[in-house]
Image (cartoon, rainbow over all chains, first blue to last red):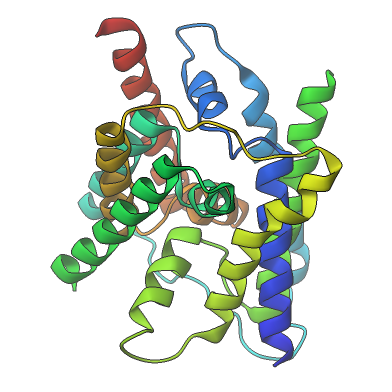
Length: 137
Length: 138
């Protein structure tokens, strides 16, 4: 029960962070990716801020304890090899992100705005996830 | 530093805090694409309540910050065809590549994972190339 609450709070913090940082605005994302045009570096600070918090907490708190504050083990990825799946998938994701200016977090946070375009994006994103899940199982 | 940069930095720190909380309390990586996919799969198999709770938080959060003038965009650029193609590619790509901007870009790089650093450089480079083509070459 308490872990449902912490997950809800974590989601709220994450969504608030995406909104405050303007990462939810696809136009600004495209301006950030447009490094050969009229480049807007603003969103580099989002990743900078996120890493400034997550990196030290992970290395100084999570890594030494390896357990949560409730004493359960942390679920960390075990894969270490860079393979063609990782690279190919990342290329497809980059293509979609570059076309739309939308990645999964901002897509979901934008749902409450109620714009038609975001429903089209989220519906096809979910379809893509389910197709890929079937193919790679 | 301008106010806009500061706002982006603070927002980034806040989402870093959310990702840290999910690791410290739930022991889970805050990868939105993975959480979404697993939550959908749980409709037919094992339950994953924490994922749905996280997603609800992510979706309603903008409503809580809106009274402070921090709002969602009032337009989504691009035609419906571009958005549909973009959504499909993002959905397939994040599953095949095991992550997106949050799971690889924040959590993975935060863990100094080689896979996540390579993945982030790959999708950033591809996205930059795509924008360069659509904005300047087409």
